[in-house]
Image 1 (cartoon, rainbow, N blue to C red):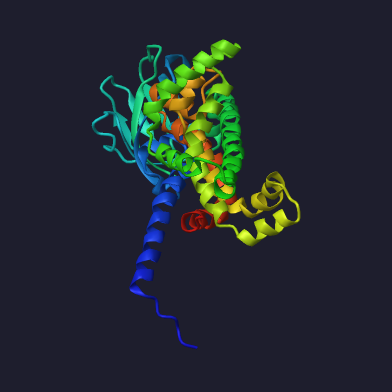
Image 2 (image 1 turned 135 degrees about the horizontal axis):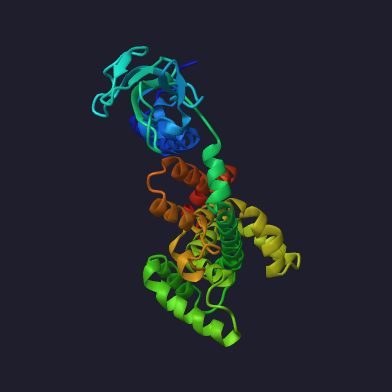
Length: 381
């Protein structure tokens, strides 16, 4: 058998796909690894060094004077700079500018007349001929080699104390109906535009295509004013899930109708005509024939719509509110960026929690994505 020779175009396409996969996968993997690392190691080194021993300068504050004991006329404070987490001291010092002046096990003279000894395993001993004073302990500066440490404490902190659980529920409450409702409405509309003849069908389709280019920000305020007016007439609150469901449906319908109409219009005409000959109504044809055959297109749009509604912040802030009980996951993460900007372990865990559900949805439906989009782009009627 002769080996198949790849054309230059095929090679370029394959390399491009590999590059796109790497650009998408590497940041996601880095986020997951960082969210599982110890908070001190996140600050000290990058995620790609997570499986190697890291060297870092550290500062440890010894226990206060109340922890000292008297031994043979000397006042002693002892402990371990790693607090039982494990590590290896490679050097230490008595000045923040010189954290590597002494080898482990050496005796370092301090300015106040006390002595510091720090062992390789992290055990330290502060010794002074006079009693230590003050409510805060002395600082110990050292350089250490710390083995990789992974923990679930970051996720426990986020889930238990940052309100992510309520925001997770809020995002699900927004995203699921905001995905299902446009699909149902768009499927009926797409069938009508593809297979039902009525006056103004071409004009209506042109209007729908034109709505694809309308910026969300331009139509958001008029839509909000209209919703508040209608809601006041029917007694519906201005802030609530109904408003955000309708907003997402309105912004998602043009793409959904256009995509589904192109796909449904390309279905075999013979099947439709045979069903009509057998006495099937348009509703029966739609339910029993069109919907089962249109599953790839429905799934491909569901991926786009769910990812958009799950990651949305602007519409959620406008129609749902910004209170602690109304915040969606994206809003909660924005708050964390403001109030916990230095806590990288909290931010990475929070960010990965926000992408878990979209990842599951994408991998569950991705096999239909390309098939549905390609079919919708080349078929028309």
